[in-house]
Image 1 (cartoon, rainbow, N blue to C red):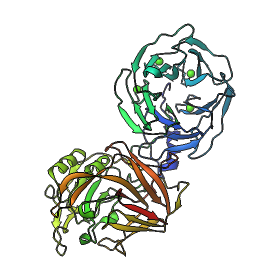
Image 2 (cartoon, rainbow, N blue to C red):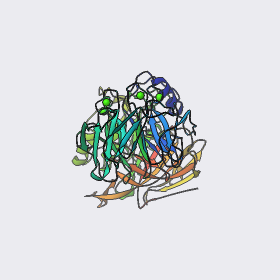
Image 3 (cartoon, rainbow, N blue to C red):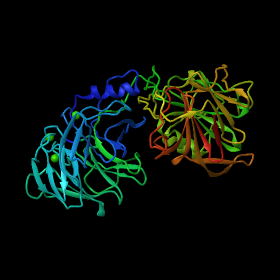
Image 4 (cartoon, rainbow, N blue to C red):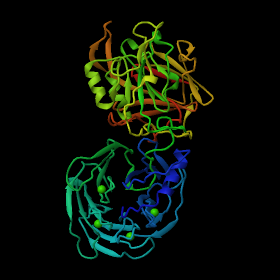
Length: 557
Ligand SMILES: [Ca+2]
Ligand SMILES: [Ca+2]
Ligand SMILES: [Ca+2]
Ligand SMILES: [Ca+2]
């Protein structure tokens, strides 16, 4: 709300750096507003795409949460309005991660039944409160007990008011949500006396939506978004005309309150941490390379797998495991044996903008792959070779010394939330048994901060004898769907539904957290949500995700 000032990035970044990054680096501060959610119990969630929510507690049951820049430093911070007492409580800093904060400023405003909101009515950069009482607006000029500076009528008694600056001139007006018609009316600036006229209106959202007003694209002008409790999704819209959302994502739970503002808590575009592991020594300018590696017993031991940053394991025809191994922190010398791509691969690797090494695949699969990645399959680039002594078909290897420079100049963004602190509420899980299919059953044993893989009764190692380990192991259960194709042995070639939601378990630090996985679209990645709505981040390090058919199982103890 109100003016977004530059120059406050250091404080905001330091806060988040202390949480997520051991080695903060200066980062540009995005000027766009963020969505913040508040649970009925006063637990706040700041959404950080690609990371776990930044959470803290402020206020409690019965409080109406507010977000605003109470001191004009450009950072929006929490407040609550307590209707039963007519009291407002504000703080000028974002509370420390997972802490419980107390008020800096307390004053009286309004009375029970008033609808309270916060905005910058005079353009001085400081947000103050306003309220609607049956369609009459009372706007305060300071954050102290006082009479309202401005009083005027706008809309009807049932309209729900929100502050915002629709014309981006630095002073907030009001948006009214007329829920019965899913329409939104706004006035560019606050009036003083009389009846304010609407500057414009639009239709947005559907019945049951909660409006949230913010500057989603950072152009200085506010526009509507909605929180849809039914689907636990947020949809934001960058204009003041009727139309579809420019951005949609899962966030929140039914009963949570959505707010918008710029907390300056954000994930920097680049850092010296490796984006896939969260470990130091990373170089985000190194492109992700993916290798499709067989886990048939005929392919073991595999080359280069112990060096992968991140692995997704899927089941192909005959119940055999196949690995989608991602390399970013470092490239291995040799990977393999490489096998072909499958229908599910483009759906899983979309967020990584990777180069993909594989032996081949159906034309339709390769066409889909080329939409989301660079198809560097056998024959496309130098570096493939057949290794003597391996069984035919399980002998195709790749030599990274010959990987051509592709001139990529991008930055790898974090995709998985990573946080070294152990979440609360886990149950002991030092031994994990995963049955992905009949032939592909395996175990992970926790030892000294990481899990070690075992399969067929022996420790899983690569060709160098290095153990296959993971700091975090995730099992997601996905519905198997048909490709309509069969392999040469007559086995159906499976595909999977990997967008939507389903059951899962996250294992880290020797503990387990049952979760629901959620994924909005193939351009995003999985989020792992506990029953209380909190996300479970990975331990910095290597993550292994088992994309397990719902016919599979996982046990732990
Ligand atoms: Ca502030
Ligand atoms: Ca002001
Ligand atoms: Ca304005
Ligand atoms: Ca805007």
